[in-house]
Length: 171
Image (cartoon, rainbow, N blue to C red):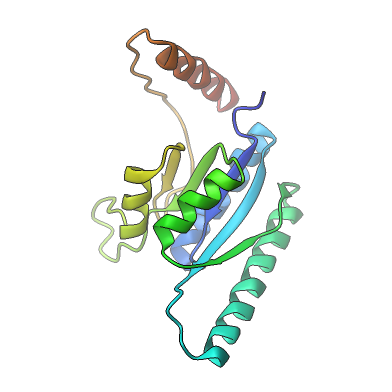
């Protein structure tokens, strides 16, 4: 069994999300994972022409991202475009596709003083039963040390085994 068979990447197409995409690519290469891209649009767009334009633009961006990921040699599933509440859709899709990890950008932080989570990232962390990795804008995924608290339960032993695998894979 793979630790990270499927990584769900919730993207909002902002510049700050580039690091999340690059981090997902790095993780996918290390763990031979598949990436599934997800973008959520609001469901309260009443103008049909505007909704259609947004849908087409979002699909185009998703497929561009998918192509750039494929060029890196990483497998991807069909990108997913959803409408509705971001939190609900991210969590539901992660369950529907049986993702092993939700990867999401931390959100915009114009002052860059500290890692501040955007609303969506914060809510996903709180509500998801799946592991969530939040990538800060301007920072790339690097693991030098892995901290794994244990209480000797079956769950913490499994977490320790996974932490050891991650530490080995990241050297």
